[in-house]
Image 1: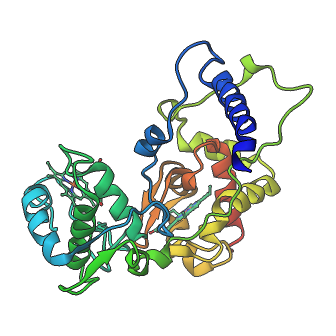
Image 2: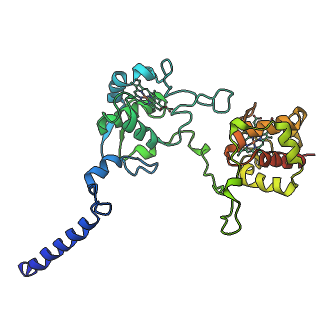
Image 3: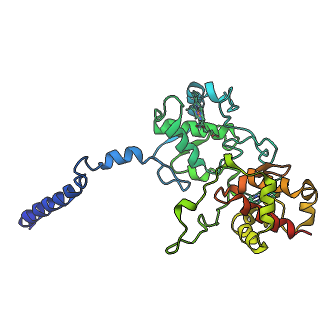
Length: 300
Ligand code: HEC
Ligand code: HEC
């Protein structure tokens, strides 16, 4: 029965091979299609749900030796960080301080990132030199240095995702749209008339405030909703709420131009960090000023 079909199978193989070679880089007339093996050499990312982790395991105990040998010189025997090299442990509870100490234990959201980063980039001078089991062992040891696993712990492909980092809940999905402007299909602006203003050519805050004062309040409210409300609506990490008089007392006394400058250039206050323009660098200075007007105007 089987031998009867053989010529047909052979024919299909030839057909498929023919189809594949038509796309085999011939599209541009040079190069060849990457093989599965070649792609797998690049496809090394590990995701928070563990996708991409290779089979393997490593103990805290083995990790200690490997870490001392390959990592401690730069990152310190206890993960405290030598010289300019980053600390890998410590810093719990400092994220809202003036000088937050961000480490794997105090700041990072996912254990998978630690595995991926060490596997991909460390040791600094010999990236991708560690075996998978070595990466498991060293990752386990860095978790141990952060008091997240016990000294007899064995980290593996199966249990890595179950080790949760303490700061994970503080990472929230940003649901804001990443584009605001409707696409223009007709009667569009003359491209030559569009002025790109860089931070170097920044206008003085006073001039911006004056221009913004002329903007109608609804414009400021719209910008506020798109770019500022995420933090300011609920006072995330101490961002002053638009309707909250107490939040704005003291701030308003600095003068509008100072408030606007802080919103444009960014500002580190007692409560936290206000990113330049809330992270929305595409907003013009006037738009930010209009949003500040709206926020302060709402707080009598
Ligand atoms: C020669 C010095 C050196 C050695 C050795 C070294 N690293 Fe690093 N490591 C660095 C530098 C520099 C950075 C920062 C890289 C950057 O930000 O681009 C870094 C960053 C890291 C980070 C990210 C820290 C953060 O919070 O951003 C981790 C995790 C890490 N290294 C782990 C390791 C491990 C594990 C080893 C041993 C297998 C190791 N490193 C060996 C220099 C080193
Ligand atoms: C990612 C969160 C975040 C976003 C987005 C954000 N802010 Fe803020 N903002 C803060 C925090 C936190 C503070 C308080 C800092 C402090 O006082 O410690 C703050 C403070 C301010 C202040 C007071 C500055 C001062 O001198 O007291 C103004 C004004 C302000 N933001 C305007 C804006 C405007 C306008 C936008 C939108 C374009 C915006 N913010 C978007 C987090 C944010």
